[in-house]
Image 1 (cartoon, one colour):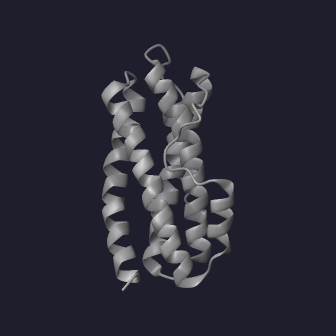
Image 2 (image 1 turned 180 degrees about the horizontal axis):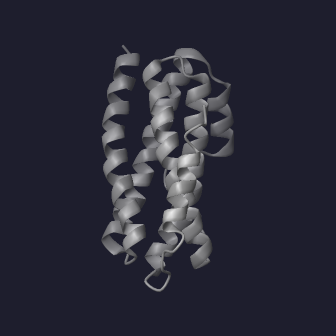
Amino acid sequence: MKAWRPLAAVALLALAGCGTSSASAADKTFVADMTPHHALGVRMADMALAKADDVRVREFGFTMGRYQQAEFDQLSAMATSWKATASGHAHGMLAPAEEDALAALNGRDFDKAWLEHMIIHHEGAVAMATSEVATGSDTKAKAIAANVATVQTKEISQMKAVLAALSR
């Protein structure tokens, strides 16, 4: 169910002409750290589409995968253009062993663990995005960051509600 991914190409083309002269160190750190963060988010979203038992978790997977892939493409292009390198301090990342353990789960156990991990993952993204909005200078990077903060804060609330319902 990756038919939405061509939309990411359109978004990437829209940013192809983004300027590099206004990129600050904060902008470069944000795009370099958020790129692998969103790559993990897309992998987790694909996992939810393939494995989730609960329809709400599958819907999260579809929605999150769609917009995170588009943002990943934009961020990756910016990071490449700016020759930005990751700081290694991206918040909310799963270790490879945690990602493997999540992938090994099934049913309600998967759904609950996926929500728990994605909430932490989103909280990390919101922290990085909030920092970029406050300290960045590139308008495109700041716009992406503002979108991440807004969308993912809302999704955190929604995921917490679903997790509470699944835990009853």
